[in-house]
Image (tube, rainbow, N blue to C red):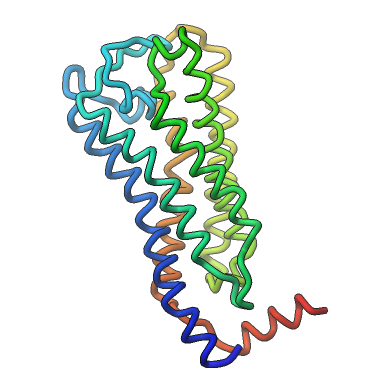
Length: 241
């Protein structure tokens, strides 16, 4: 890779890193603001579903009362976070200069999931009128897309200039997220209308780890704006072989 190519990659990596930080931050900030506004009764990160924050209500679903005064804040977060992450992935390039198509598919799935969550809030009424299916599809797409994205980024860490430790961390959070998703779905399908005490914590186990992982990856990419030529040449040579 020439110095000219390195100079070309530098602003792209800086932009990609910023977007990978911004996307998860939008989600987490929207979640925090919406939860803080929910005071009667107080919102619980351990007990309540994330989706409850996007339901203005009042409504009830799975034994949980939902009334979110700032539902629009959470829904805005749902809408923007995945799209922002997708933009970051689309901007980021391999060290060899090529696009990382393997990451675009899960990133797109995550973005579509976020849009569905925003457009179809998960209220009790949504379950009755059929739009709840779109919300469920969005949640599932987000779980799968976000955690798969973390796994792919971790497994391809040399191609995008991440350290071995960061690569291992991304793989770990992806595995944790998928295991948490499996447990979450199992509890949903078996609980019926019975309230589940720690369902909010389990659901966040499927979401928060990959969000934090992407923030850390974005920060690493931001700081390491360029990559050394020998590393890039070795990857390119390996692809040619």
